[in-house]
Image (tube, helix red, strand yellow):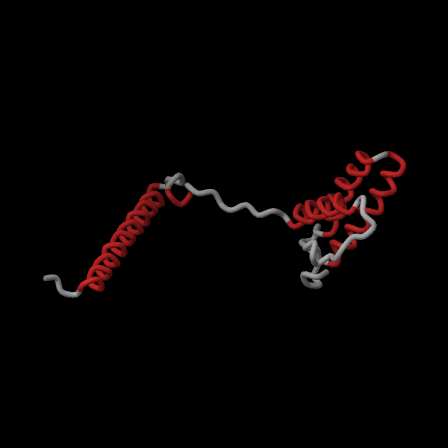
Length: 139
């Protein structure tokens, strides 16, 4: 008859899992140390790409472009917070949509969308050229 029952089995399973994890980590660390010592930059440390972040101006331009196209035909812009925009980005949105509506009247929808693309990119690049506004996330 076994003593300890399920608790002993759980403890043994946890010990085996911990041992396997430690062995795997030790092997990985040894591989990295070996690669560093030999000057091999293709070791485990360089095998995974570093995460890519999207610059704030590009994120801004994408958001402004999306919402500008959404509100181009409407009479209202909606709430800037529900759109995920800061107050400053909302100002850009209103200016871009106003310009696009004027272009649409004279040149059509395709021309209006080109205005949206161009002005959103230009205005957001200008807004974030020094890294971004300093008045907090709402500015």
